[in-house]
Length: 363
Image (cartoon, rainbow, N blue to C red; front, side, top):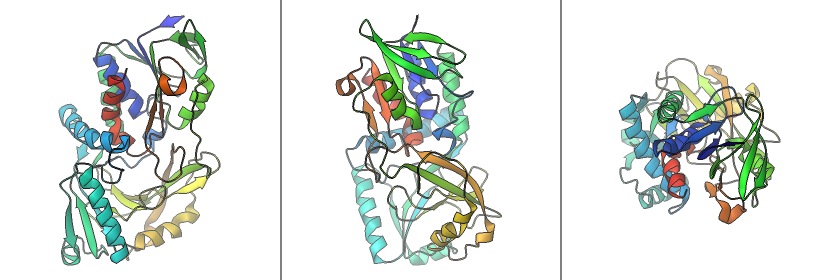
């Protein structure tokens, strides 16, 4: 039987951030990762956007940790020389109905402490982004982009420098109570039993299945529609825009938006495609559907410039529209020392350092 202070299951960006925090605070920490390297799941398949915290219900955990996480992440990237850029985001409205939706988003953002938003009228839009179709734009200058792989490398380095360890190819196969403590059965290269006073289930898309395997109570269901897949299409040639362009949100996501990487390459997505089981192939037949959505704000979009890029799966729980992040401890599920993280989808990357602080303070 191996023993340590903290076990984190999952070496995605949130798992690494949580493990780093505990290790920096002097707790002996081991990360168990089923894959052969870190960040192979949800963390490797996202838009790499640093969200400002505009959309989430005031007072929700998402709203709190996104707003704080944004500032922590910018500071961390600056201190560790992680590639990032505060590129800004325009939320686009066309017509009175969409403008009213943007006003609702603005009021929500203000309630969340996002006070740097500004309106841009159609005339200024035409001057600054002549390819953009919009009757009004809500400008979010604090939105940015980040090298997510570089971020995870820095978190991993901090963890290891503080004495923490990541053990790869080591899936958790079972859990059992022994002497009032939860003991994990680990397979793969480790093939051992290990326990700790604090065990954090940060397994992303597998977190609900893992919690059930460990015997946790109150495990939320995935949405009845299945898994929320998000497809991305890349754009060949020069980007028509100098910043991130977002339409008004849609059920299950933020709409097919344009993001830029740190080299200035443009891609569109994600959409929302409900699937019965996770798959990461992008169906090229969705190209015209993408093009129609994009033309709502970029009329000159040529579908021939769109190519399938990659896809991700959002680890949604409960209601299919906009559930909050869910952090459970023994008071809710009954297993001593276990902390379950459910529904950590967007803005999980932005929130990672703040989620780590939140979990540490409760454990």
